[in-house]
Image (tube, rainbow, N blue to C red; front, side, top):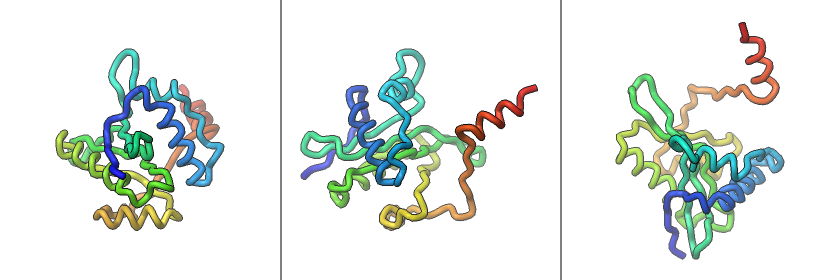
Length: 164
C-alpha cells in the first residue's frame, strides 16, 4: 500500500485527535489527553493571526494512519529556528510501511527548504523500538540534556509565588 504525506487540514482534526489518543494509549497514559478539536483548531487553523503549530498526516488507502505535530523552536547559538516535533505516531498495524520515515523525511525537507537549523524531539527511554528507528535514520540522543517541565499545580503554584 502506498503511503502519502501531506500537510494537515482543518478537516483532519478528528483524525489527528484520534491518533493523539492512540498515542496516549501507546505511551501508557490513556486518560492524559485533555485536548479537543477546538484546541487544535485554535493553534493550527486560527480564525485570526497565524498558526503556531503545524501538522503532517500520512495516508494509506484513504485512511489517516500517522501524524507529525510540530512547531518552531529557536536556537540562540545558531540564531535560527528549528522544528520541535511534539508527536510522531503511526498506527501499530501500519508500522513498517514507511509512514514514520516519510513523515520525518518531510520534516527534514521543510528544515532544508526554510533554512531551519534543527529537527528535534523527545522519546521515552523505554520506547526501544522507536529509539532504534530514530538511530537507524542517523538521529543521535542528546544525553547531556535533561528535560524539565512545570505543569499542573506546580506551574500554578510557581506562577502565583512569582507575582509581585
